[in-house]
Image (cartoon, rainbow, N blue to C red):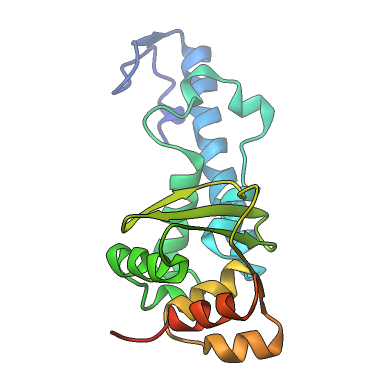
Length: 201
């Protein structure tokens, strides 16, 4: 609609005024194409059953649009737009049942601290996401680092989705252990500590 005006001058909200009909027309065309592309690709992946996080990883502007200086991601980003489009069509729920009742950050930290025990180093591996973490508890303070420790006192290997379900109380940790969805290395005491993490005080 704006393109049909064939304006000679355009004053954007965040950038300098633009002159010349063709330049204005091209800018508006690229804006339109970028918005349409992000919208259509988001819908495409939604229809395939992907979550917002998975869609964000896949939707990127084509090079001919991404390189336009007026489409640089300063005042908004493609990931923000993807999440907004998802929410408009399907609401805030991303399809992961563990997001319905997430643990408060303080409670999650307390559970991690109880798991690690005293001055202990625990390594967490999440094969499904490729992530690994070090949890080091010293004098009641838990420190988390986004890498696997060199010599952990205990190692917990579990898919992130399974861990979320266990941490949210939607799945039995003992059942996950028996089924083999959680693997503990470090001896029987480590196993006891792991199960003790989920006992209410």
